[in-house]
Length: 432
Ligand code: SF4
Image (cartoon, rainbow, N blue to C red):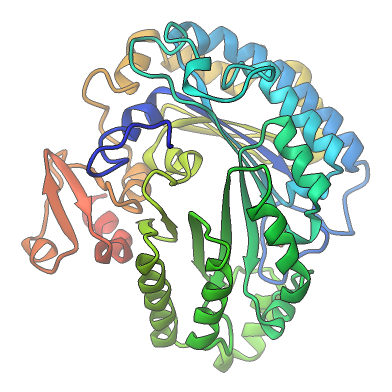
């Protein structure tokens, strides 16, 4: 059962205050088996900058976890703000040997006192109500790692679960070899099918699959085929992203050479509709532009990003958000490593931001005890990506948006319909 109490709209009424009150931790692992042709993330395949080896990176990250954990205890714990979501992303976190990933997981548990500690199973009862700052039931921890299916073995999965990971998000993208080849993914469907079975029947209780649609020459029947294959495993969460041709990637260069080969808008829309209808038929509702879940199975960590909550990013290039400030770690490994000793000192951008702006009364307001602050412009866009939408806050509503079924207004909140999710950009332009 989800530790977050459910009402008619499971996350509309309950998750929002917790997303704002507590904080998330993100760890960036910048290694992959191979760089995919569409990817522009900060990650490396075979060719890495000098010095950026997995062992050196893990050591640096362990140091950052320890130092930032101390800093967090000083600034956040006295306010009763817990860490209730951790996300290992990248890159491919499961590129690291199982024992390194487990060391990192354990280090996070040790440094941030999350979910009641390592020695006890994760449950509501294990987080004291005093630490949670009130009588409300304390949330448990959502601990997610992204994974490449090629890296998953029963032992690896068991090691992750043993260390404390309770959610795994697996990059499948497609199941037809021709599409996987175009994306330069390392796997083939026949090879990973048993691996997905190990996950589905293994000790990690929650798992999600990532898909990409709108690929060149992709047909809607292939999208349906991929969904059918994946739904066989009864996932409770699926992310489906439309392909973006990111400048600088091999796929972008290809599309410039063969510009007529991009899938047309109508076909992309058809694929998108097929995904939404199929998943809805299985009870997975669309709670964000690209994300579908059974009620109560939404990704807490990602909701925190979209709803404007605070998070701390660890690792090269990782972003942290405090209040309305977003601060990035250096992208270059050497610079990142040099900055570690200064965490919590005068030169630390996070220290300066917290010291300047987040006094306890402001934290309390932001934690949901008073009406939340007016959302900054970037937040409005992010919030409109989700079904909850944003606060009315004087935003002008075109009556046609209501009659066309894009929005509803409920208790001072603009609620986005499933149809309206596609128009996040339009709302943003009208209000910012
Ligand atoms: S596995 Fe993911 S992070 Fe790595 S290159 Fe491919 S898309 Fe990018």
